[in-house]
Amino acid sequence: MPTDPADGAVFVHHIDEPALGPVVVGEEQIRDRIATLGDEITRDYQGRAPLLICVLKGAFVFMADLARAIRLPLEVDFMAVSSYGASTKSSGVVRIVKDLDIDLTGRHVILVEDIVDSGLTLTYLRRNLAARQPASLDVCALFVRQGNQKTQEELRYVGFEIPPAFVLGYGLDVGERFRNLPYVCEFQGPA
Ligand code: 5GP
Image (cartoon, rainbow, N blue to C red):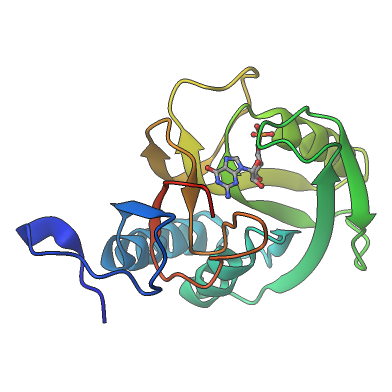
């Protein structure tokens, strides 16, 4: 099993693959941070049953762990979006591929995102969800890429700010692969 590389020991990746670069956030760090986020949400949402919305596919691992760190009655729903084009850069033009099953009217919604880069996807999603008349709408993003945001979105809960490199693992893919890594590392392409 890989360990966090904090002690300078040689790090052995979970998968033998040259595209995997240095670890950005280790398994234990992710676990600890999610426990803290779960505590904060549990405290902030006392007396309310939040509805967690997972943006597929990248946020599915985070959402599964976050939901179990929140000690409140809650519900979950899923939506899938795709950016137009196959580029690794977001255009902000988003298409809903799978919509929610649950009506948001009067609900306390927490939008669970994997990573906020330009923020354009989030801006689109927030506007789309807000139009459905929820009682409240907060965002919980596991990662925010430092200094890249083109929009000023309020992010109530953030896991980690990470440096500019493109990352994979813990739900994040490159060409649909590597979502099963239990930690997040840099992509050293080509995969
Ligand atoms: P934004 O619209 O904020 O520029 O981009 C957000 C979306 O782009 C994320 O939800 C994610 O799907 C994708 N994305 C942004 N940065 C990364 C990254 O470093 N790795 C991976 N795998 N996806 C990313």
